Length: 524
Image 1 (spheres, rainbow, N blue to C red):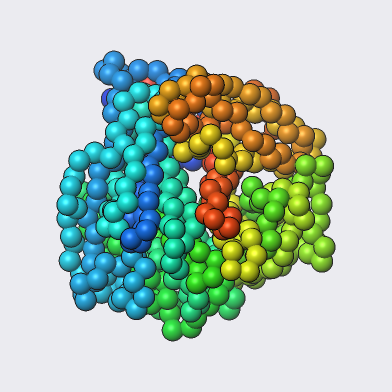
Image 2 (image 1 turned 90 degrees about the vertical axis):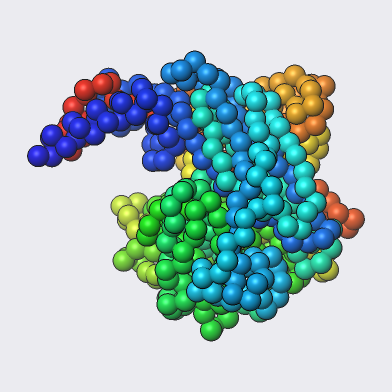
């Protein structure tokens, strides 16, 4: 029975590639475990979701869309399309739009789910992409800018990336907020959320499909589960977004917590918008799937405080070795050689000015190399001092296996972070600066990162740059494992406004067995 079932799956996957429905969904673990006779093909369809950016009257949001060159034409010979369209917004029972930063308006998950879905005012495409290799950008200063949902197909599907960057000039949410728009999935982890009185954290749940999704939210603090039934059975209507204020899910204000988002029916995109009364605001993207070792790349050299929030979500505790990958090697932070995580309980550690003027990346590995307990983690990083502080988040991220992309880079302000976390396994990486949105010639530069070190560099810029451009990171054949992040800095007066985006592999290709291949060998 198992052999027959796997054979049918092999035929189905092959047919999917032929008929154009192969999509980016499952993790791409490279070619190491590929069945014989398989071919690596570009995905033919991908989806993205961008949450509503801000309600500030002094905010401006830029959307930048990009797809790398290099994908073969689709089966029908067409180049493909890539566009986002506005989504509806679920309002709470009191008529206020959740997630818009209006203090005291959040009614909790149950009211938001039961509220009215307000259709977008306009459904015209946003940042429609016409060709690979050249970014397209648009801006809005509307305080009612909606969430966006969309898809790409054909040659524009592999690696399609949309960056959402918001600058808020004043108010509690002032600063720079950045997010690589997320792909829909059924489960997400967000270490580093807060329900404390000085924070307003909203999780934005967006449904890209034509059928409703049902979502459960669970908060975990230092003693375990925080949320009760308020986080259960949240209905997300088709093509709509539901913002949920996390503090309405629990009666116990908690500074350091972890959020688990699970779609029991359908799928959603999820991202957390965090606003701090003193440290500004930014997006907390989902962390990589829990695993025994995690890497958090791109801590800026001038970070004035770094807080690590970690969780072992499985049934076993985890003991971790904590190391900072610096330009000269791996070091152990003073007083934190190891970190013990109790199962299901969130642990927070203040690492203070960890980098001490030298940029780095945090590497967490099992103290016992044979331990398999999965963990997830994120950093809250602060730059500046006193009233001129700004925060950003760095979640654990996946390695770059084939390719990763950071859109929305300007003439200055971008820093590329690369880390090769394993000693003796150097990483060799090709970085390409695309053509500019308004003109310019692509430029490519190769970087070598010694195993056990990190590298921060001002990335290459297109010659004759006009407008914005994208950075594409591709490990060379034979390269050791490499992780990447991009920091975007846009100072506002004396405020060191910044945001950090991890660059996970874009999963722009999939392994497809040849037609009729028997996959039962994979079960032996």
